[in-house]
Picture (cartoon, rainbow, N blue to C red):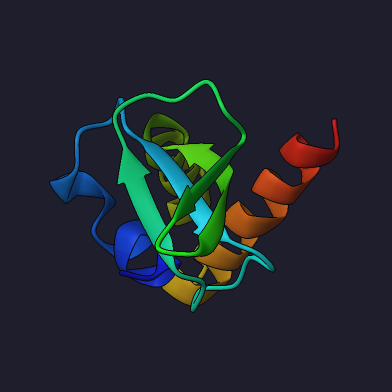
Amino acid sequence: MDLFYILLNYNAFPAHQLIYAEQPWTLQSRAILVEASSSPVLHLDQIEYRFFLELSWVHRLFQLYSNQNLCLASSYQRMIEFALRQQSD
């Protein structure tokens, strides 16, 4: 599964799940959803996944960006930029 698929289908997943994605984060990055984790990094099948966002944040951000008349790809790119800012804080 890739990050684009998760973001595109965010409503199909429980909002409490966490998104982890392979870096560098792009829409094509491999991504997984997990129920809970206290680790910022997960290793699965020799791939390092880093915490991206809580799915509940995707719900909130999508509502915000959908009011700005952005195409889906632009909205998702802004979500990646938001996650990058959160990671650096």
